[in-house]
Image (cartoon, rainbow, N blue to C red; front, side, top):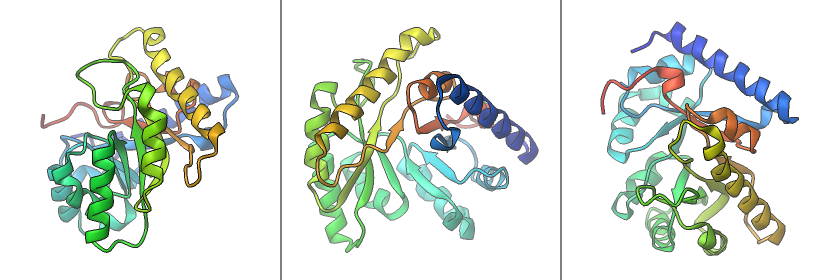
Length: 239
């Protein structure tokens, strides 16, 4: 595991790269936030991340997130918890108990389950969610199709338990950034199209896209939430 100083240095470099990219395309770097992906790393890494100034933590797996949430103790309240991995309907109850925002709402059935569990748990505030879109058409990736995104946003947003805050995608796995870029362009254009409809209760304020290998391209195309792991923490200890 990297030391707290190494993580802090990596974070500073990431922020500098974001600022440089924003300057090139005329964006305000304050619009871009880092969600640090701690999947596969030990719980003690979270305290090092907080020391570095990182407050948004992303986890992929519910079971791992629950364990870290308990182990981190009083520090948990200083963290904004983001679920960035696929959410199975039988894990919704656990997810709602921990996460502040869900990046991976990808079906009506999942939206219905979130609404059902929200009611059973007696939660007072709606759950912030991003609708996940499969922009690369890869069968290995979750997410609704681009053609269905607008309908899913409208459906989920009409449920009192859900507050749709934007869209999420995972770019094409390719070292050539110009092959990855169309995924990010598609997500931005989808968000713009949905925003123009002015659907009540829908906010297209976030585009969750870009990971360690492609985040600068994502920033160029409008990303507001970057899901970064390796570039901050090095390679995972557990897989």
